[in-house]
Amino acid sequence: MRRLLFMVPILILISIVIFFLVYMAPGGPMAVYATNPYVSAEELKRIGESLGLNRPLPIQYTKWFLSMVKGDWGYSYISGRRVTASIWERVPATLQLTGTAFFFTVIFGLPLGIIAALRRNTFVDYLLTSGAVVGQSIPVFWLAIMVILIFSVFLKWIPPGGISTTGMPTNILDRIHHLVAPSLVLSTVYIAIWSRYMRSSLLEVLRQDYVRAARAQGLSEFRVICQHALRNAILPIINLAGLHAPFFLAGALVTETVFSWPGIGRLFFDSLNNRDYPILLGILFIIAIIVLMGSLIADVLCAFADPRISYD
Image (cartoon, rainbow, N blue to C red; front, top):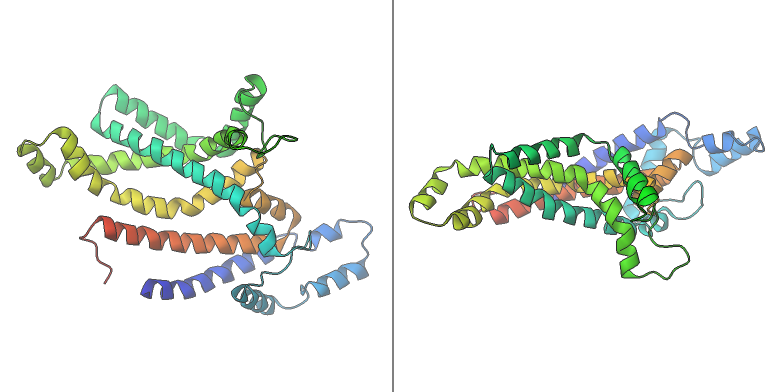
């Protein structure tokens, strides 16, 4: 409860920062209308007054934040729809993408890190470590383009983008067919990061005295690794999972844009191009909440996993 209460001033501070950064960005929300030759100066002034953009920024922030707390996130400058409706209709698609990417990260990243640690200083270790470095270094947008070019254009194994086949009834197999490529691209960098963390953490645990004692008692290597080493080695990964939750959304921005995936990331990109500030602020506010909650959940899970940890 103390941590939840402490999040309130932090969230207020974050809201102040994102609000002023967004509204002080070059162009402004009126840039879309100003570039239209059919919109006169009088009409621009009237539009600015109707949107409340003629008021000082502190007053605009206060009005916006109070409305956000009440659940009224305003209306889109471009579509005129409610911000909540525009965002929440994109949530299922983003959850499908990020959830699948998280699943791939767990089932590939952790085993690869464990294998690299157990085969330390062997060819397998060098190969996996080099692959992790490459995976961390490849830009997501370049990898996404290469995947589309090779596996869609040349080999025709996957669709070039979208969430379903146009003109065809939606089914699970078709959705999976469209989902595999963007989720693997999104998870690539996190598979690399998690595997390296897992390797380092497990190697550190294997050097501990209690692991040597377990081996001295005649326990099999399998029991030593699974029952003694992995439980403690997994603790940094739990923290990493909580901290990486918002970064999956950040990566989804690029992935959804390249693969034309209709999620929150694509909405953020389109709103950024159109200077649709209410949508941008709403998405950034949600990400801020996810960052804080992810950190809290990671701390709670670590306390459950390790009885030595206490937050009293």
